[in-house]
Amino acid sequence: MCGICGIIYKDPQAHAEEHIRAMNARIRHRGPDDEGFGFSPPAAIAMRRLSIIDLAGGHQPIYNEDASCSIVFNGEIYNYRELRQELCAFGHRFTTNTDTEVILHGFEQWGEDCVNHLNGMFAFAIWNARTQELFLARDPVGIKPLYLYEDARRLLFASEIKSLLAAGGIPREVDPVALHHYLSFLYVPPPRTMLRGITNLPPGHWARWRNGSLKMQEYWAGPRAAFGPEPVEHVSPQAVLEQLRLAVRRHLIADVPVGCLLSGGIDSSAVAAIMAQEVGPGFKTFTAGFPGAGIYDERVYARSVAEHVGSDHMEVEITPSAVELLPRIVWHLDEPLADASVIPNYLVCQLAASQVKVALSGIGGDEAFGGYRRYFATSLSGMWSHMPPALMRSAISVATRVVPISGDNPVGERLRLAQKFFNHVELDPETRYLAWNAFFTNDMKQQLYSQGMNDGLPDSLQEARQWFRRVPDGSLTRRAMYVDLKTYLPGDPLLLADKLSMAHSLELRVPFLDRELLEFASGIPGRQHLTGKETKSLLRAAVRELLPPEILRRPKRGFGTPIDIWLRMHLRPMMLDLLSERALKARGWFNPAYVAGMIRAHQEGASDYSQHLWALLIFEIWQHQFVDGEEVAEGT
Image (cartoon, rainbow, N blue to C red; front, side):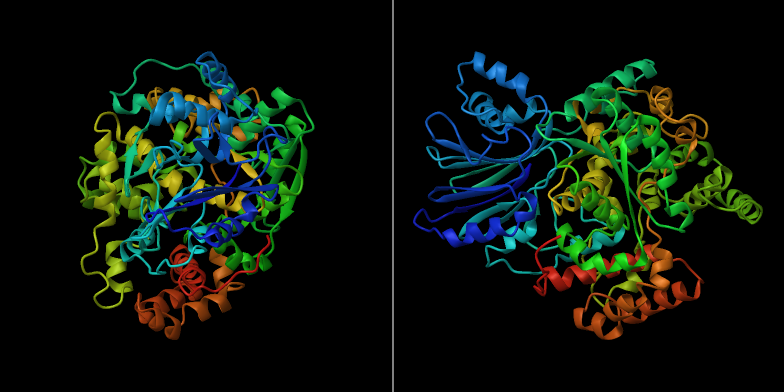
């Protein structure tokens, strides 16, 4: 695990060592244990290392037998031992025990197809000095990041945008289309980033630079079963548990102690329970909570799991003063990401990093096993789409006066979903699903944008529909799970997980996104994921004997944050300053009167605009750092 960066100059005589050293220094937090540089004009590659496997022999760059190829690598390959044996049989000679060297020899043996042999999380770069070619690749689901920038003089790549900017000469201009999509989804979908000209190599893609031009190609479109008809064969809970156990076992490979982030939800709890069976009690678990914040404080559930599995459990309490961390968190994120869980995730990673170098997480369980409550909404489409919308709207309006619309009330939660469904009843099913998950609607954007800002911008929802067209067969629920795997997962949870764990030099691993487990899970019939009022039904059945009953029964939460309250109190001064009429006019993106109206309505309790205001606040903090160039002090 580390950070990587590099420069390829288009003029073979051009070279500037200070640029690659500046780029590498900017990502020191990703790998404080070691650094390495490789100079082979016109290329310069570099890395920062967090030592996890082969602590003594893993210095990078690593070279092949005749030193014609060199690699810098960020991530872990969980099947590297098996691949090493296979490559030795082909005659390859190894000088280290690292997974990095396995990738390099795999590239020699299989070329670009080497990525299809890897089970792990990765972003790597291989420079071939003999052919003057650069090969870049990112793992199938986008666990590890890789950014690119190309101009007339050079090609740059790096694990973080701030590393690219350290090379100098990159215009700091906001991409209006990226901003438009960010307001819809609260993240910027790859390959765009918020900075014009900087590309986010999409998950499951490789890129090759040759003769001054860059070619990008997808090598993993998704699990094989996702592209066929709906599976019909019943999958047993025992088979699910065995596959999950194998995935966790693979992710425990390390030469340092491994801990677990524990939210008290079923996914992280299942990982912790299997860890206990694999390594025995006493491993460390970590959680975060908000004292006195009701549903936002999940520590009681995490404690229950920790006691049940026998872990050495630690907690961090989050107080309102944590809002002071926002500028530092946004700096580490690299891109504006309006997920309010960034604060608890940042702090729980900080706690974990004080004790271990590696921690497992439950990220990915929802996409693999049908965990989001919004998947229930897709089933409502089939049940109600044939009914007169006016009649159903009237019935729901009456029902909501009697039953509270709340995530704590199963009936109320269904009414909330139904109410949202009929807000978009005129849309086709795919666009309707995307609209359920959108935040600033097209109507809101029309009022939010400054005059002329909306001209020529694409419809975010219609552009996102391309992902549904990839999997035309099967139920809408199953197709929605695929879309989330390819869009929301890398755009939000995985970006957050990588940047905020590496902010503290912590390697975060995600067993639910093990490639073999994902392929297996995609072959599960949709009806086994959602039954009655229960999400992740098959996964719950698989781990039923491993967890306390209250964990299996509780609704999905995750690391929530009370931003609705904070925006009215502790975040209010920052919000009023950064989203003031003066500040918004200076930027020119948004209509100050419309933003002021949202702030006023939220402050008075007339409407809940917490997520919308949070998104605007994060974007403005990001602009100060990545557009204006305001520095954030080094350190975590």
